[in-house]
Image 1 (cartoon, rainbow, N blue to C red):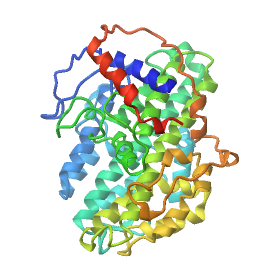
Image 2: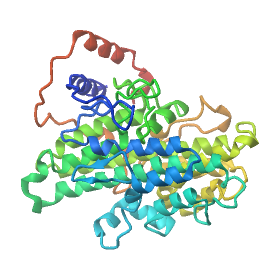
Image 3: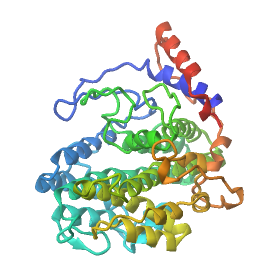
Image 4: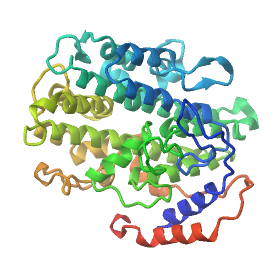
Length: 454
């Protein structure tokens, strides 16, 4: 409950940011500057948030593989202010771990897990190119010859979801590790505590997570924060309905438990990063953030595996689409499962990989993501939730935690409650909130779904 009131105060502040944007970016899509889905950056990360213009472009390209490939390799949405002649590209992001000289990138905990599973540092780029070019790769899928994998339906699902939930999502984690390293780098002196220091790198992580189209764009008639943009933020909102992890009235339009927790943790971490001698607090918050970022991918792997497992849920004509979605999400989640249970990860991969036309064996997937494995991955049972309401016949009920299994050094949702919100480091120039907005927000607090207070 305390977190809810803190988030309410943060959103009151963000609502009073002056909107100095031109109103449009990337064609006819409006982009509101200031807060990003309620989070208030202390630095300018607008260009980073605009990577979702490329994500949107790939999605809209559908089965125009040449157009999608051009966006993937050349960009066009997120221009680098450090070099106005260049765009940042999703392909560059996918190859973050490619150069052996980049020892830091290859030391990132979740990158090491992915390498251990795929046995290559360029897994994201290799997979994406296999899909775009329609080529067979036994590791990723038979996109040239597979009965399901070669279809436009499957390949279009793979391109947009690999871009969003493998490439962009993993880059969010890369930025988080960068912020932590920068904060702990004493050679940088006090500059690391400034708004252009470690806190700026964390702002970049949030910008890549939310994107520029979640707030104010209305390009599809949505309301802000509801999860109708194009960046990874949207998955938490969508999955919360299936797994009963919704009802957390953040005040920005969203209601998922994951985004509620991430809003709090990112804001707390941003303030700690601007304060000396808070390394322990930063590390604790980042353990929580890593865990929360993993949750929607696990949920999506589970639910799409279930939906594609039987003709009662997915017709044969729709199987290519749904199994591709299962494979896209599972391919992102499996490295983390592999880290705690390699056998279970291998079994899930065999069931959901798009190379064959078989329906996944639901019991294999359900058992792989047992409470024991979730806890060993650093995820609490309440974070994942239950399919009892959406799909009672799936028999995927909320598990019970075993505290002794939370031993991860990097991913721990059980420590989220330990992170306290520090005082704001520097005061911004915000106008006074309107009385009407205050009444609306306080009303939201009272109608908050009480069953979600744990």
